Image 1: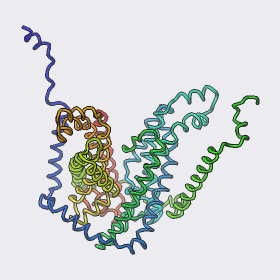
Image 2 (image 1 turned 90 degrees about the vertical axis):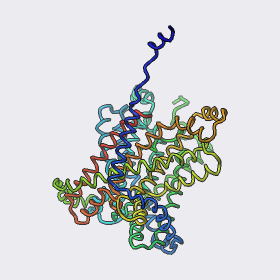
Image 3 (image 1 turned 180 degrees about the horizontal axis):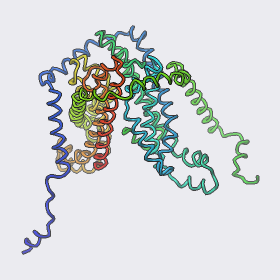
Image 4 (image 1 turned 30 degrees about the vertical axis):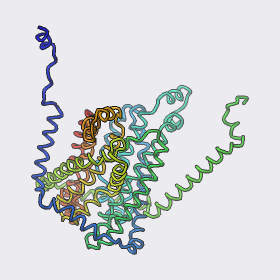
Length: 273
Length: 271
C-alpha cells in the first residue's frame, strides 16, 4: 500500500529531450553538414601531420643572417605598432568606458556598449584594408587599425570594471559637495585604475599577435616577411621569422603577465574579451 | 590651520626614505614609458597631420565603397557557408584536442609532474603563434583551400580552450577528487567522476567562445589562401572593387554579430 502512495508522490522523471540533448544533436548535425561542405579529404587528413613536420624540418637551421638584417627590424616595427596601438585604444576607450558604465550613466550604457560591440566586430586586418590606401603602406596604417579595434574590447571591459566599483565613495564625495571631476578623480579612478592598467597590458599582449599578422595586407610588421618567405619557399628564412616571433611573444607574455599579477588582486576575467 | 591632518602641512615635511624611494622608482618608470612611447611613435611614423590630412582620401575611398554592389551577393553565398563550416569544424576538432591537453596541464589532475610540465610548455608554445601564422603554415604544408583553414584554426582553438579549461580544472573542488581516489578510483575514474562533472559547463562555454573567435578569424583566413569568404575579399581587393569589398565586410560583420549574440545568450545559461 505504501508502494501505491509513493508511486503517486514520486516526481516525474524529467524528459530525456532536455536542452542539452537538443543542443548536442543540433551541433552534431551542423558538424556533419560542415564536413560535407568542406569535403574533408580523409586521405589528406592522415598525411597532414607528416606534411607539416616536413615543412617544419625545412625551417632548420633558421637563417640567422636574415634574422639580423630583416626579421629584427620588422619585429621592432610590430612591437612599436602594438605599443602605440594599445595607447590609442587606451586613450579612446577610457572615456567610452566611463560613459558605458551603467552605474554612472544609466541611460548611456546601452548605446555606448552597442557602439563598442560594433567596433569589436571588425578585425584589425579589415580595418587595415581601409587605412592602407589612406595613409599609405607601412606601420602607421597598422597602428591605426590596431588602435581602433582595441577600443571595442577595452571600452567594454573598462565599463565592466567600473560597474563593479564601490559606489559609496562616489556618494560621499557628492555629499561633501564635489563636482563631476572630483567624483571621477577621487571616487572612481583610484578604485579601478590598477585593474584598468592590467587590462591595457593584456591588450598589449593581444595586439602584439595582431600586429604580427598585419603585414599580410601591407600594414607593416613581421607578417609580410612570413607571407613572402613562405610564398617564395625560402624556408630557412621562415624559420628565422617563426623563431624570433615565438621568442618575443613568450618574453612579452611572461613579463606582462607578471606585472598584471601584481596589479590585480584576483586574475582578470580578461581571457574573455 | 591648526588641523593636524591638513594636507598642506604634510607637503613641507621631508618624506620618509621608503616613500622617497617609491617616488624615485615611479618617476623613473614614467620617464621610461614616455621614452618608449616616443621611440615607438617615431618608429611607426605616427603623425596626426598625416592622418587628418588624408581624410579626403578616406572620403574618396568611402565614395568608391558605397553603395555596396548588392548584385554581388549571390557569389558570396557559397564562400560564406564555407567560412562557417571552417569555423564549426575547427571549433569541434580543437576543443576535443583541448580536453586531454588541459587535464594534463592542470596541477591537481595531471598524472605525473613531468606530464604537467610538458603539457604546460606545449600549451604556451602553441599560444604564441597568431592564428594567421598557422594559416600560412598550413596553406604551405597541405596546400591552399579550406582544409588548411580548418587545420590552422583547430590548432589555435586547442591552444585557447586548453588554456582556459586547465584554469577551470585547477579550480575544482579537490575533495571530490580525493573521495574518488580513496574509494580506489584510477586516473580515468577520477577524471570521469570528479573532474569532468565539475568542468563540463565551463568546457561548453569555452567551446562556444572559441566558436565566436573562429567565425571572426575564418572571415579573414582567405587573405592568406586558407579558404572562406576572405579568398573573395583578396581577389576583389586586388581589383580595387571597393563596392564589392565593402559588401563582403558588411556580410562578415553581420554573421559575426549574429553568432556572437547566439553564443553569448547560450553561455549565459551555461555558467
